[in-house]
Length: 495
Image (cartoon, one colour):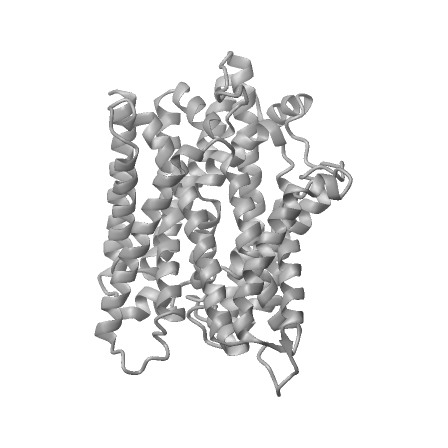
């Protein structure tokens, strides 16, 4: 059987398995409660395990191993920062969300500041997730296109349409109730693919994990701590940035929090988040070890790593190229992991985008004149609409893919999640209210200022390069902007 046929068969079989899980979970799902909240009956350990796949996605699956070539293990301090962020989520944000019984977490901004603030938070989430998740999905479609469809003369947009259509179909009825369980399936295949590839590398080279890491260390590929303060990956900068990335991209993100809010109790949700944080460290070590293994395997077998037109090694293509060269078993593992990553990148996000629009713009929780039947009809229309936007972003990004996507994603997050960080920090740590009509202006101006700071950071700060900490700066500027437009305290405030 040809390589293309093996890949296509893997894709079809995995998709069939996913639809079987969808059928099991959605056959008793009825109405919006199952779609938006999964009936708040999800076991916490299922959510914790599934969140790994949702957090990892195709970016971790391909960009983190590929990123070892230029960045060694300097990604790990960022991961250590993630653990700090998860504890903040567990003991600061989750109690707030459960106390207010929220479905969309941006409803808090309406209660705290006003309708414009709620819409501002929702819009920035939609921008963040639509761009971020679509780019994650793009990476998977891109690899499938390169390995299968390109040689058949099929244009790029066709596999993109197929992927989005399938995700739309299996989330259309069950929504979050389906996603919570399909995420566990996707996490399993992601981890099995990475572990199996490492085992095959060790077997083919007849070495152990310690020997692999020792050889990689000699070549400089296991360095964890970047001590140059002017470097974008300076370790303290990474740790602090990792904490705030998690607080914003998980704790202030409807996609991730909506899954947590399906747990039966606050205590269950907290156990879920804390467990996820420590598992995340182990899993990222696995993917970095995979990256070191891939590079070492290439050096020992004489394989040339993929390079772009500028002569730079293309990190995102290292894993697919080597997996393809190592034989059928490794290729099957890679394809199954990649397809799982693609689905996990988009299913929960598509559901969360639908939830945000329905609650923060259509106000399902406040319109007493909108019965369940009409709500379901509107929800389905919104769901299809966001699927179409997803597709447009994936297709539009095709000409611009020339860097490791993990760097692009964190750059995007720095601009789009910063205003959310500032809004929630101001709401939680002050008693001031604000002039609600000016909140959108502050939220737009601050990312623009951050963009200018990043462009001129070397000139302005004596060679210092802004990295992931741009998110923190953006949040701080938003906080200061809200101070400027504050009003005097008017009685007790939420938060």
